[in-house]
Length: 446
Image (cartoon, rainbow, N blue to C red; front, side):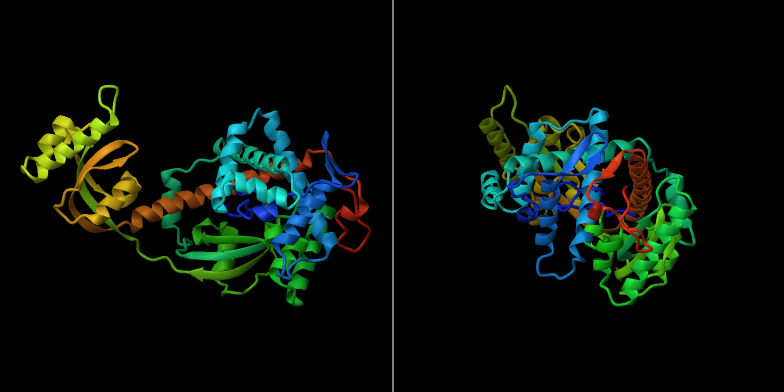
């Protein structure tokens, strides 16, 4: 159960913290001699990389009082760095690449999220003593991992209509949404009885800590193996049908604020917290019936001439009362509507883009708009009518399709990551950064 699809720029389940918090993402320049803290296949992670990432987490949680002891934070951060490095390596092996233009667009997106220009973003990073080149590299790595995730999931996940029907018809189908947080203690692929027992002992430690008064998010940072551990295990809002069936009955019986018992899943042990819940409502949407005339600039028609032609047609409809449909058939360049008199049928506002939706909202039934411009060209629009449409069934089917796809995607990628790590050579060279034995023995090498 990974963090649901949701970040400000690069929305994928295995992403690092959102880059919209740019001042928390800017890595300070290295000022001391590095040492290698971990070997990951034929690559290494340096002390400076770990220090920079830990500093980011400290800034992210500043004043919130939720971080566990620093040795725990460092182990969690190192685990995230190792997992990211493994994914980048696999992506490179598969020929996945990211261009400078891709990174430029990502930088633009981060700047816009922070209401800055790219130049101001760079200045902000460097003002904190950070390296903008390192900042760009981090963005590039995240784009790379996003594309790896897409490749793995797209080749393995499909949803059929029968699966949707079965979910909607199932007596266990639950409507509404829940806000969840979780702690996941993973079991390595091919684990023996001792490894399973160690994972269970760690989960029991987490449960005991929560029962003893530890904040759930702090316990997630300390004990969870999931990629969202450093976000306090927050899974965000999910529809009940997105939750694995093995956990759905448990969640449906909980009240907001409650924490579950330890649950055994296919990948390990889980503890869930129901943060909040809300019921699903019927989805009533406004639909419009409209028709349009579209005039496109071309090699034979300049932009100014296209605007003037649209204006002339508007005057012929409004002042001379010429037939809209006839003019649309003769002059409109919209291939989908011209032959039927510009008739766009009944549609939801966003179906034809934001500009047309906004214009429809300004018109009354039977009113014709003055020419307005979109990327497609110049439009003359007539609003013919409005109606309220119950889209509950259609929306439920779309949500069910997405829920099934998300559930399958999470399982597929979780299995992929577990196999990736199990088959990798990972050596943590600093004993204090190794995972401690649940029974309290000295830290062990990975």
